[in-house]
Image (cartoon, rainbow, N blue to C red):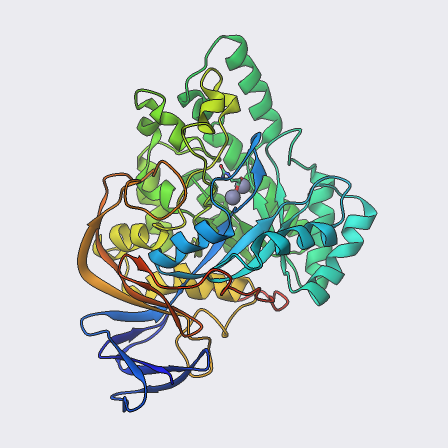
Length: 463
Ligand code: URP
Ligand code: ZN
Ligand code: ZN
């Protein structure tokens, strides 16, 4: 028995039309103007948009970071994602210096298997430029179904790698069908300024942002793009926070390079003043790159609209204020970096993008689902509504409003950087390979339902 999604309006990255869907055997089996319902369950999608489930290309679940481990694991994090309308995540498997990529991936498979409630893929981070590490990249792409590798230009002494490692990774990926992702901030400069601030006795959360000036992101983004240009390699710049970094991507594009930019919900609605909230509440916004001055929000939004930024990830990396962010109560540099954003990613883009009149539902789908699917080797199995695609379906009610709050969200964390925001539009139903995983505010899925999704080799898609 399948499920007929009846009465809705189908929205893909390119098309909008009235049709019903039949979900059967985990796939979209039929699309038709009015499908017979006999023998099938029926869900009412009238008044709703029926879209491919969201694909979140940037999550950190069950990840050791900043002297602690993220508050959400693969069960709680994917449950929050599902309730927000996301049906696939691509999480970062965190390589450590001297370890093999193969081991790293095995560790992350063990974290996710049996826990995730929606499907997942992996990116690998690269912690060292050893010959052994570089030699593994082609095998990881060809045999392990991972097509993307993140290098960090920041977090000195922890994750940061040098330009030699970045360049070698770019060359290997260009040759073997991989995509390099870059965290673009100048970690050396940040290290110097941070030490100076600490020596001067400056401790509050706002110093996180003040010691990571926007020029550090601008310079590193330029450098990464130039390195990619020399290596003749594609590049994906993660979590772009500022106009300065986004402009570097636009400039690279004008030179004909295969550069892709991702931004995140927190950069569209939070701003520097959030760091100045009283009672250590500013610590909620300690994430990297930091939240910028407000005027950057409009630039990022317009770049999303103009397709100068191509992908919308959450960068979900959740830490409790109580017991985790508190590690930096007396020293901003000890506050674990990250925020819980997996559940509200789609809501924020809908509110500021679609309700804000900047983009239509098709572009919303492109940014939050189709483009990530194309970049990370999942399309057309995922990221669209088509016969034969996985039955990952989001029935989105554009008329129902809700207010975001840590009191009602489903993530396993005591704070929400979007606290108090009113959103008009929310999931009515969410299906993951045909299984109804969310109905309104209620989780209806199953722990362990999520499966690993092998990524196809990367090829430079036109976005
Ligand atoms: O602050 C952040 N973004 N935490 C997650 C790690 C990263 O750099 O993506
Ligand atoms: Zn990063
Ligand atoms: Zn991240």
